[in-house]
Length: 141
Image (tube, rainbow, N blue to C red; front, side, top):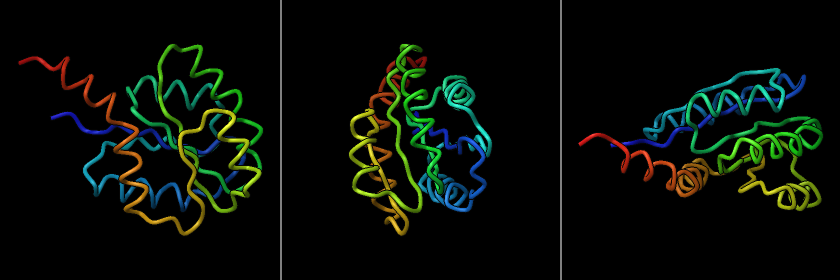
């Protein structure tokens, strides 16, 4: 049975990774395959890691303002790759204006500080389902 594959990373010089590590842990506990890309990614490196790992969802962890700078390029790079991978953003402070901007960019979901783990797992599962279904159909019988 295919499982959800998630790539989680932090872009720019943001060094606050506790949230990304915690989310990675509870996604793994929910039986998802998680590739933690770590700190200091660029949009190109994060997309490359997600493509190499055949990610169904990309999670961007943010604590500082930098994600607003990098996400347009990440979304462009994903579009150019020809892969339709949903992007989820999670972090400490996501203002209503930030959320509106992320929606305009095509970000599939946003989770602020204190988000419910079960809600995150359910959202990732729902977003990952098309990729999981594709891999199940392609699996040798």
